[in-house]
Image (cartoon, rainbow, N blue to C red; front, side, top):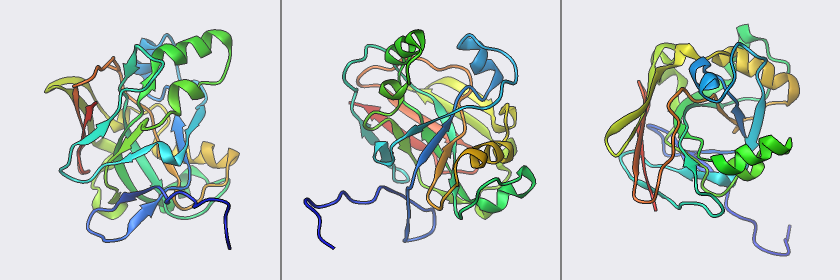
Amino acid sequence: MSYVFNPPAVASLPVVGRGERFPIHRIYCVGRNYEDHAKEMGFTGREPPFFFMKPADATVALEAGSTGQVAYPTLTQNLHHEIELVVAIGKAGKNIKAADALQYIYGYAVGLDMTRRDLQNEMKKQGRPWCIGKAFEQSAPIGPITPADQAGDIVNAEISLQVNGDYRQRSHIHKLIWNIAETIEHLSSAWELQPGDLIMTGTPEGVAAVVKGDVLEGAISGLEAIKIQIA
């Protein structure tokens, strides 16, 4: 088959302990999935989960032990960090029950949902989609995927983010409003999940702005940590 121009390379992530890489199909993101973060954004309670998406090529694939470079994006004066557990889907499924959800998971990774908060807030005011605030280039730095059977007790893992050596976000995965299995159940009722899908499961409280030169270090117990610098 020939194309009018060369198609882009497949976006992918390294896998811990393997030479093969994990090809990315879609990136689904869960909004306001920690209670304290929901409160700091002006919301409360266990509202039904909602989702938005990032393009696969928004990913910055981070190698273990390396420092990735993320460019400060255009059009914003208020770039925020959001540290998140990323769930990597390994097989297709639709209308998956929470009780069966874990068997669809290939592994887990540490990720950042970088957000042009000023643009997102303006879209909220106007009742318009958030794409310009969430789905821009390099908005999804993600570390190596740890296979599920090597990830340990992910449900009780600590999740944290440091900026220039100081903690900004620190919580535990068990504080998710909608846990991993419930999230997969809700998501798969709207879309048929495919191998290569990533789910960014939400961020805890403490989101804040970063500027050029800042160094961000994200960690989740049992997974490969990530490190980026805003350039």
